[in-house]
Every structure is written in structure tokens, then in C-alpha cells.
Image (cartoon, rainbow, N blue to C red; front, top):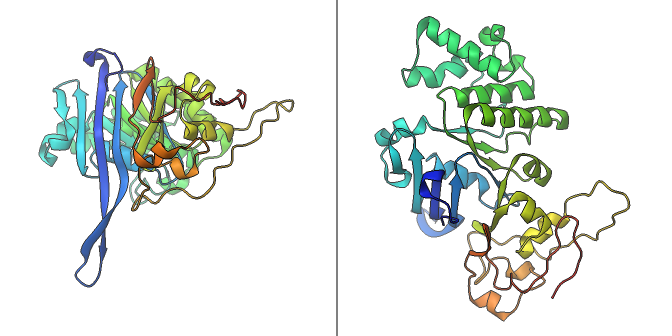
Length: 347
């Protein structure tokens, strides 16, 4: 999926990515099936973009992010990364040794700032660890680099001798961001970086991420389930359901005019800050499909109010229906779906 853009403008291309976990039973721990956490994800990420990856808990968002940086091994598919030094590389085919120089340009900010920092290490050691491992700096140069990174994320260099327990959740997340910035990466995967923080602190961290993107020419994949946060920071948005991408579009366009029924339901769940607007919520029947035993055809069809016979028989393809707007629904062209402030009109 190139979205009509020059390949030189892209930083990441993911094609038919699958990450399946084996289900083992019995005394001999034989494999009896697979949990299809990620089941055929396709997208292209352009340089400088912030792609929001959203969906219900358990839909495969975090697994997708961790697979891209090879914290998890992919079952199938390809992941191509445009490394500034090596050019295009196939992440899924590289050994650990081959990945080492590439990982300097791909970093991750984790969801929980409390468990992602080693409580036995000082701030200096936490932030300096990537620099030490990659032999980038040492001695006074290392101290200067750590102090600069702390200043960049809004913390005082005097904190270098302290331990993580001495900081609030927002400050710990800033330390995680400083660590991610240490090697001057080009791609950062943010795995729900503000979900564990107070609302006022969330805004500060989001503004910091936006400033850093401008200052350091960063590209983000922003994983979240809070659609208000995603709307604030992203310019493109991908919606996942049970391991599959069901819609991909510019953020504003997806909020205003979704083309997939699941996206419509997500938009309808957003509160509208206007007491004069009284929209009825869209209640989805049933439960989220089991990724170990998904339904036939479209995974969403048992809960979809627009479903027809073909939905249970044939899996819809992710198609570009409008410029840079992709949807995996058999009837996207025929439905008139409600956006955040739209109507309930349907065909």
C-alpha cells in the first residue's frame, strides 16, 4: 500500500503482517491452535506523519507496535524500514546482530512509566543506557548528553542522581521519552504513553511530543484507545478490529466521514462538548470476536447492523475508496455513516 506517495517519502511499509501466539494443551504441550493477535495488517507510514492506531482493548494495537520493532517475532508478512544510513531494510528478515544498528533509529515509549524504568538505576544511568550500549558517548560527554536530554523533556539536570521512585508519573514518562530520544531516532512507537497519567499531565506530555516531533524531525506511531487524544496529536488514523485493519484515513476525514461501520461506532462513543447536541449512541450487540476462533468472512459482521449474507462468507479487502482513505467493508460505497457531528442517515 503506497497511498500514491513516492517511496522516498515513506519511512515504514507493513504488508500482510501476522503475529500469532500458539495455544498449547495437554501433558506434551501440543499446539492445538493459534491466537491471531495481528492477522494481516497493511499500512504505509510517511516521514513526519503521526499515525494513530486505535481500537478496543485486545485488538492487536500493542502487538503490532512491538512486532514492528521486533520485540515480538512476526509469524508472517513483511516490514520494510527506510533507515537513514542503510536505506530500505527488511526488518522481518534481519538477525539480532543485523538489527542492532537499525534499532538506533526505531525506539519505543511504553505505556506504564512505573514499570518501564528500572527502579535500581539512577536517572543518569536510565537515560544514558542506550548511549553506553551503542558506545556513542562516555565520560564528561555522556554527562553532557544526559543533561541535555533531560532539559529537552523539561526536567532539570540536577535530577541525574535520583531514582525513579522520587518522581511523579508524568515525570517518569518524561524520563522514558528522554531515553527514547537518546540515539536520535527517526521512528518512535508510542504505546499509550499518556493513558496512565492524569488528564492535566496528559496534555503536557502530548504537547511535549508534538514539540519534539518538530524539533527532531520524528515520525510517530501513536497507539491509544482514547479517541480524543488521538484526534489531538495525529494526522492519520488506522482503526483495528480483532487483529485486522478495517479503516485508514486522514484523522479529520475519518472523524467526520467514516467509511466502516466499526469506525462509526467508535466515533459515536465520543462525547460532544455541546449540551444542545443529543446524539443517540450506537450499541454494538454481542462481544468482540475471539482471536483464537474468529468468525468467517468479515470479523465484524456478527455485531454489524448493516451486515448481509456476503459479510459472513467473504472477507472484505482493504480498499482505497477515496484519496488516502481505505476501508475494509463490502458496502462502504453504499452506506452513509455518521461522523462525530454527523447525522444518522443510512442507505
